[in-house]
Image 1 (cartoon, rainbow, N blue to C red):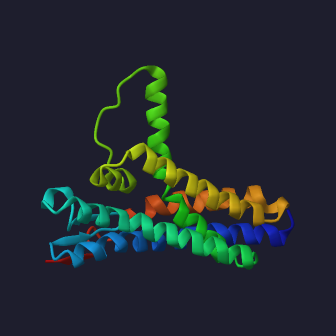
Image 2 (cartoon, one colour):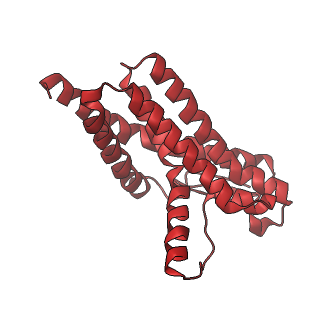
Length: 202
C-alpha cells in the first residue's frame, strides 16, 4: 500500500477505537430511556443497564421486551443509517467506522448460535441462561430466541457486506483488519476506563 493508504488504515483503526464506545453508550441509552420511562429505579453502566423493567421487577412481559429490545433497535438504526450514508459518501471513513462499530454488537447473537451449533454436533445439552438482548427480548415475547439471534446475525452480515462491497478492492483487507483491531480494543478499554455507574434514576 502507498503511504496514504497506510495513513487512512491507521486513521480508521483510531476512529473505530473512539466511535465504538459511542455506539455502546447509544445502545445502552436505548435501554436506559425505557427504564426511566417505566418509572422504576434504573442504572446506566458503561456496557449495560440494570433495573428498570427487567425480569426481577415484575413488570409485564411487553415492557420487559421493550426495554431489552430498545438497545438492539438503536443499534440497528445506527448501523443502517451509517451504512447508507457511507455508501453515498465512501470517502467518509468515520461513517465506515461508525457503521462497523455499531453492527459489531449484533455478533453477540452469532456467538450464541455458533455455541448452540457446536453443542448440537457434540450431542451435548445446552445449559445456562444466556444474557443478551435478542435472547431476552424473544423470551419475553414468547418467541424463539434462536430466530431472533439468527435475524441479528443476518443483519450484521448484511451491514458488513454492504460496507465491504463499497470499499476499494486494494483497501478491503487492511481496512477491515483495522476496524476489527479498533473495535475489539475499545470493547476491552471502555469498560475498564469508564466509571462503574454512569447514571442512576429512582
